[in-house]
Amino acid sequence: YLGGKSVSTLITIPMKNLSECKTRLADSLGIKARADLARLLYVRTLEFISPLAFKNGFDVAVVTRSPEAVSIAKAFEIQIISEPISGTLSDAVKLASQWACANGYERLCVIPADLVAPNKQEMIKFLKSKAIVTICPSVDQGTNALMLSPPNAIDFHYGSRSALAHFNAAMIAGLKPVLMPLESLSFDLDHSDSLSRAYSVVPEIRKVCK
Image 1 (cartoon, rainbow, N blue to C red):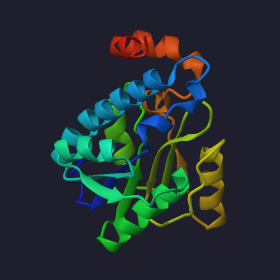
Image 2 (image 1 turned 90 degrees about the vertical axis):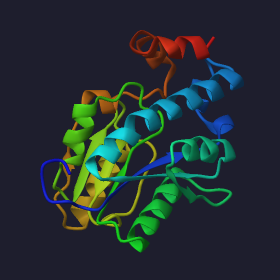
Image 3 (image 1 turned 30 degrees about the vertical axis):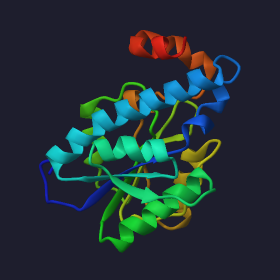
Image 4 (image 1 turned 180 degrees about the horizontal axis):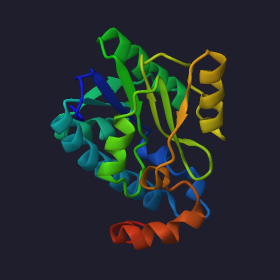
């Protein structure tokens, strides 16, 4: 339990339909390559988070409306939070927050399904945070990891510069948010100029993007 008192924590991973993923890479990759890339990163994320969570006594749930994402998660014996037919990322995370509260979890950690090369030590450092709101910003100031205690501590504001929006929401609520920039967690693959770096870090990515 990360060297401290056991806290009931749910790690949730939102996942869209594969055909809807990585649209910002459309100028570099075709539809099939984007779907294959999204699948690869999603599987790698589950391979990374599942043993880490199990070892430290955390639970994991994927929030999705994608049948393929459900099938993959079930192969990892990961819980499924069924998402309605349509909705934004903020809607999906709000649903996970409500589910976490309803099931008695004290903390909610949200990580994306497309981290390129997350580092275990950095992930554990993030999970060790005792702040009510902890935010790991992405390179472009999105939110690449978010942890709330309780799971509904703030409203969700995913989108452009969402790290700042989440920080401000916590401040307005009278909380003391912590910004925790972590290099491996800040690297996602949302823009074409990130592809060459991703190819060098994870050669398998180049193969699926051909």
